[in-house]
Amino acid sequence: MGDLTFGARTAKALTKRGPLCVGIDPHSQLLRTWGLDDDVKGAERFCMTIVDALAGEVAFIKPQSAFFERFGSAGIGLLERVISESRHAGAQILLDVKRGDIGSTMQAYAQAYLDPASPLAVDAVTASPYLGVGSLQPMFDLASAHRRGVFVLALTSNAEGGQVQKAVRKDGRTVAQSVIDEVAAANADAEPMGSLGVVVGATISACRGDDAARSRQMTHGITHTARSGESAHDLDALNGPILVPGMGTQGGKPADLRRVLGRAATWAIPSYSRDIARHGPSAGGLRQAAKQAMEACAEAVGR
Ligand SMILES: O=c1ccn([C@@H]2O[C@H](COP(=O)(O)O)[C@@H](O)[C@H]2O)c(=O)[nH]1
Image (cartoon, rainbow, N blue to C red; front, side, top):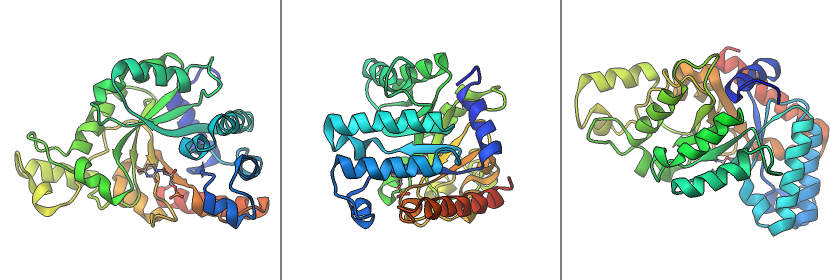
């Protein structure tokens, strides 16, 4: 892992390997499509095929913890193997586990995923801020101590998320914007960027940063944002990485990266799970799909 922070490693990985994260979700349906049984052996074949084909090529690998947890301790053992072999192949590992709890429990989650002594230690995890961004502080602290990262959910790719995330606060900001602003404050002055990121789905309806800023200037309190139903958000000051799920199967396209993220698209980590895995089990098919996705995203964000 060396001396670099997660933010610095991310900047380097995006430049060296390009903007792509491949999700590993050993999904029942995908296992069947690959001709595998929906059990831990089938999941092992699925995961290790993806790791062998892609962890040496792509910048980020994102196992989805739920698909491993469903097999109990054997599934967790498999997750440990996916983590160690992906790391060995040079990928940054983002564990999608969306933890969120009171501070004392967040400390234990942080030890599980961000302490190098843990067999489940990864480069970064996803976390939910809906017990308050402040409740995540123990996880932020441990991430910083061990040069790892945390991606905080801001605007998720599912349609239901807007009910909470796009609600407008008394100060005129959406709940999501207040999450983005708290993460931005923690990243202020970091070079080349901070190690705390946000999750913003490629599928959301959005204004770019400039429009969001303008709409906030126009009115106070219940703003233009609320009246138009747009999720005006501004990522320009984030100074951190943006994990962008919802690409491919959920409908997100490379062109959405600029539309949704504006100038901050430079730090986008577009993430595809099913839409890459469906090209397996052939290693060549997986590599070709990943290469095409990465090149399309790189062009869209100007890398
Ligand atoms: O807002 C979010 C946050 C996380 N996810 C996760 O990403 C993958 C998406 O899978 P696809 O097959 O590429 O649709 C999955 O693990 C989700 O839990 C998300 O979709 N949206």
